[in-house]
Image (cartoon, rainbow over all chains, first blue to last red; front, side, top):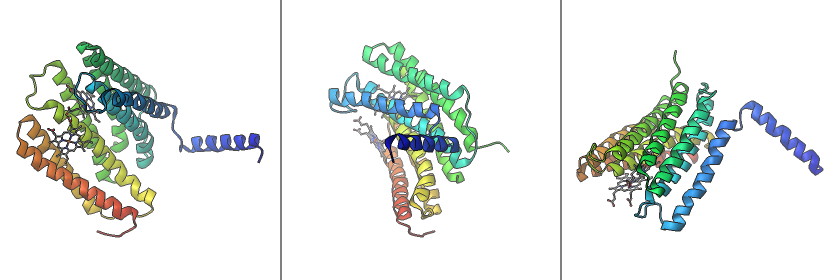
Length: 149
Length: 130
Ligand code: HEM
Ligand code: HEM
């Protein structure tokens, strides 16, 4: 098949899968992409400290680029994609995923920058924002797991 | 999705919120919560949030991806009980500086890990059990 036709077939297949709900929605795609970027930033900690658990002021920063930036974002993206499909119950959409994402980004950034710069107040603000993103995620996922009625 | 697996995911979320909260309190004032708070937080997050989330999702998808039913529902139920007995004991041990409690809780936690591992291996290899 000529290359141009192949590209067209692939585009149609992708569109069909998107309509069937196989593929990521825009918000979940965003979570997954961000997770990979945070993972690459976290890896810098390995180059600098030789370990995620090395002693030193930057330990919590790089450790949480891995745990909050990579792990938490992966759970956000995969969880909100899979759980509604596993249960057949809808997840809260609209502004909620974007609020969750904004809080999570601001949270990781604030937490990490706070430790690296030695600004304790910024660390706390980041910590609270990251926690709020988890609260929003819980609020979105709870009715997926335990629908009323 | 099996109720037990939904429980795993729900409990994971509760641990995540709890673990985040004690870390925030510690940042605000390290003297408010006694004990080894960073260690407790780290394990609430890794064993409570991440691992329980993985338990719930994996118990659902691995049988489906593997093409065989779950080897043992009973083992998975006991995995839920053991994991949620062990972690609270470990947390209490770290916050109360009681190494014996951490060790006892650790044995329960490890029991859950072994049950899960065996159950998954037997599932994807297509064995039938109870
Ligand atoms: C709400 C989000 C979170 C906040 C506010 C937070 C905050 C903290 C703080 C303040 C510490 C102690 C740092 C120090 O003084 O050395 C810490 C340590 C740690 N955190 Fe988090 N964290 C969060 C999420 C997570 C997550 C999601 C994970 C894992 C998946 C995680 C894993 C750890 C680990 C492993 C440690 C090191 C514990 C140790 O030193 O033994 N954290 N975190
Ligand atoms: C049966 C389960 C577990 C038990 C009983 C346990 C017990 C412990 C103990 C006693 C320590 C303190 C070590 C020390 O004082 O040097 C520790 C540290 C730690 N554990 Fe666990 N743990 C378990 C599972 C896990 C898992 C599954 C993870 C990660 C996914 C993890 C991550 C860590 C980390 C990051 C530290 C800090 C290491 C450091 O500060 O250098 N643990 N654990």
